[in-house]
Length: 330
Image (tube, rainbow, N blue to C red):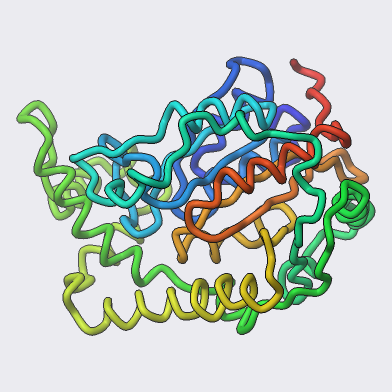
């Protein structure tokens, strides 16, 4: 982490976030299944956009969980991230999930940006489970972030509690295991003869034959996925329905509808599992630093295809606060 070696970088797209934070590049792309854009962006003080699943093609990306996987941009400003988002969108015949985005994508996500984007917006603050988890050293920063939203003209619905919040936060990886098995096998089958593995089983055996090189961190998830049944099984259908019930139907959808919200706002990455399971978009923007200097991000989450509105809200917060400061190494 360029802000200090004691701070986490988080998530499998941490390299992208670190490179952007340290000004090694103007922008970068991350991929997220559950938090791997939002968490490293927040902890490295950059802007990260995790779009609605289907807005951006996953073709060529090694799959983990088809109902959650998506690529997304990272940058040091909302404008730069929005520019890259617009360039990444498009229907791809190789990814059927992108078909619904045909009439939803926006050619230029910067066109409607305004410092007044928060005026009149209704922003929900889900206190239970999410805001109550803030480290003590970041409490003042978090409070200032919420106050800034109100000063920018937003109406804070505080609290805007999410039903079954703890259960929604703690949703497991059952769906991931089933979808990973199916989709990784599909991906590996398409690879050429120069690649030594073409199935999940062959990959496990390849790793077992090279333990020093391949098993430094084990392969627990690979083994669990190999024993999972198919996506037509009752176990998979039940797990997927439960994910949607808790995160989407009774979670985000119900809360947004009940309080007539434009978005919910979370501290850092504490709400990522909800957006991930629902397939909904989130935008995180730098909000300041804890007492020890650890970066702290503010994350806006909304319903499907609400990227344009979330970018507006993030920009309207970013411009007057100018909370981000570059790390000493940049």
